[in-house]
Image (cartoon, rainbow, N blue to C red; front, side):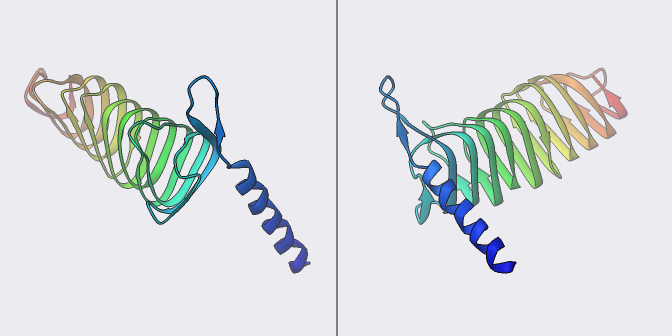
Length: 182
């Protein structure tokens, strides 16, 4: 029984690796793949230079600025993939030009982001239309946001709504409030 399960798992892994081979489109001359596996950037990743329309898995995921992930980008330790449309999940997320959901256990830092961030500490820079959930939330030069956490902060160039124990917003009805600020 154990031998059959091991053979099935090996067959699934081999078929996934075959499916993850790069496909080049004739119109854009950019390669794409439904699945990518990354042990560590520059050490081992299959395929190494493709847009991903599906899932990007790894210990630590890093992507080139001109490539994108549409679907899920999931790493055990750190995901530093830009242009993610969908789910980005790791212990720590750092991204640009993303939309969807970013879930992290530690930190989540996003630039030009729309969607939901959830981590112990979240930071959105020059973003709009997003929701932050964490112990500490920070919005820099951002608009149309909602922050829910123990400590929420937004700089003078930001405009949104905050619910938490301590709320700091330069454009708020008061610069520092307890429980609610807008």
